[in-house]
Image (tube, rainbow, N blue to C red):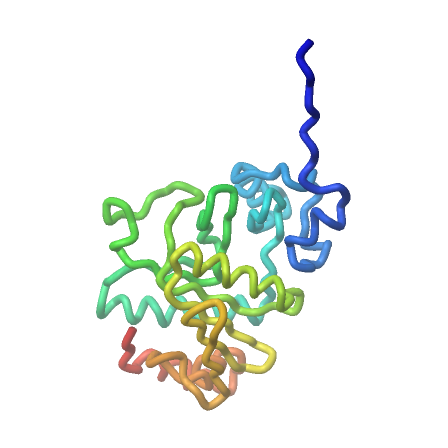
Length: 225
């Protein structure tokens, strides 16, 4: 008689299931049997009445955290990057709905992605909802519900997938970090610059109506990637 061997579950309890998510607040984890979510569920969540933008992490849907300040900074950064690409059309810019398949069964959504045409199959932008493309630059604007361990794992995922540079932008302190790898970063103070692109002070100026002229002046900076 053949012996049937039961397949043991990967996790024994819910705490073990949540541990790989690095302490993400439970209110950002969608109610779905842990470990069963797929890319179809990511796309379906975006179409729900609440329209929840979610990443797919180890079979779990995790809602993308972004508030008003982060949204403003992201919108302004996309505007600046398009200004750069207008002079040197070397690639495309994706916003906070640019879903990227970093690995099979893993979907990440950088707040901003800069992707070279060389990394786009056929030198064209597909209408496919989730793509296996890797940005040269991935940008994350930190929200209050983002925690350190969560962002550390996200950085590791980005660089293992092939991202060459990542920026972490902190609206609260109005500072940033430039990551050439997941384990090292260059701190950028309020008087510093994001690479050779632009000064941090001008970037964060979009958060204040008193500094609006600085935002407009920033468009005239000679960008260099």
